[in-house]
Image (cartoon, rainbow, N blue to C red; front, side, top):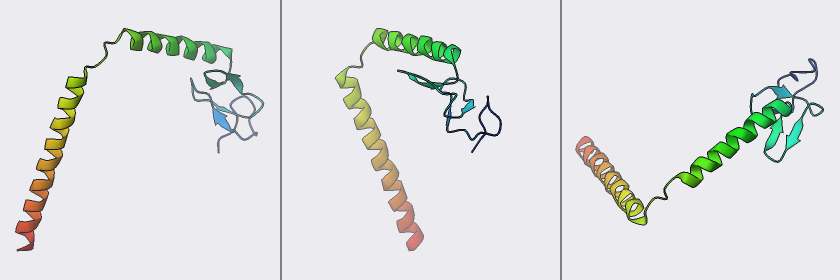
Length: 94
């Protein structure tokens, strides 16, 4: 396990969710969004998270028909792959 970024010699118990610095239990800055090394990283992550939420709200929902077609295409591809595997094995075992 790594040592705490702020207290060398102390074992780290977690990493900052934003920057990845190893932290001991005393250095954790806990928020509703996770555990961070300080207020700056917590704020950066909160801004990022809110931007992602905003973008997700703007995104057009995918139509059901498209999902069904994609699923059907994937199914056909898997069947073709299985067909060629069995065909190869059948020729190999002869």
